[in-house]
Image (cartoon, rainbow, N blue to C red):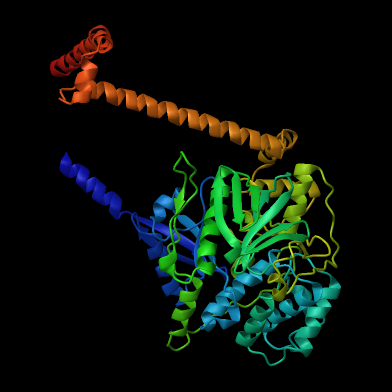
Length: 565
């Protein structure tokens, strides 16, 4: 029997699982891993496939069975983290945006970051004014189709490509004008480098927003950038705190706390799992951008006085070490296979590469909502505030990077109007129900669906019945929404109850320990004195001895039954 158990355990450990990782150019990498393979093993396989050395900026993202998004932890088993049935599906994405992407050592790294920021631009995570949007789109056009050729590019050729979820005819003409007159002769590498230099000056560069609510119940998006912590509400950046000013990050249940030198910011995530993910992202970003050495990384705990809470430690290198290591790279530049852009004639759908153009319409399940549309639609569904519709001539007013350094400026307008590019759910929201909430808001607003961009989740779009049920839950949630005062009272009551439970538990354990030691044969003066008191003798003969005899009788009867069988 023992040999069979050992052989079965060995076969279980040797079992192989199929993993598919979707890359930034929409291609897929498939491999097999063993049950006990760590995240680092899979990540190293992927980087070897991409011929990537500056790999610390990247990560692997996945969605668990509860539709909560996570970054794969490299020190833990892949199979145990995913908790889903194989084959496993994940996405390769930029996890830590370089503070200066143009300063990256290798062209292959810059190209991958370029692909990520191009996705951010299309999905509304990177906001910019119209002139900047035209320039960025022209850089993409130059990098992917080359110089303007009248024979190949007829009038209106830029409208065949869609760099944003929606844009005006005027913007299309501006893109074509810049591409024709200003970028001729630029190689793909040069255009990508210029694109990165322009993108890094924008206010929302590096933003991967987490949907939350503030203490007043207003929708907000929290994000971690190379320069600090950002809070976006409506068309404004209401908070920007540099990393060296952030003293502590903490979460309890759905509540997220950020401690600054003078203030404490409090926000509420949709679920405890989303809040924990937000907290872990903050811990990792702060360690990566703030610390000088990875040896300075410490294990962080979300615990309070009486409960252990969650513990987490960033396991990678920090930004300064990554830059120093990159400077030592000496090899022939690897060959880059760039994915050409495919014109999209069916509005509002687009493709980022050749592969997505073959996806059947029935499989195009995921719809996309940008940051600002998500803000407006969440506010509409949760607070019954009218949604402002955006025209094709949406414009933005981001502040350049120098304005980030102004710590006195707490509120910055980042857009004239809510830029509603119509289309990104993945991977913008990280909350468990954010996908369904945004799908519901799109149905309420009558928005149309576009093709699937990320395909991060294996779960299908909710059915009409599920959406209707979710709408009922959302309305009930809005009607029963309690104010911040009630939240504080509830937290205080829970803290008092926890304190009472812990105190009673400790007293009970101490009492049992005292009885056991007193009834034992330990010959200690303290216990001898207790045994000689009349109260102890009464307890011993009236309670302890009958209870001991009862337990002995029960044990003998159980042993006898076992012997008979």
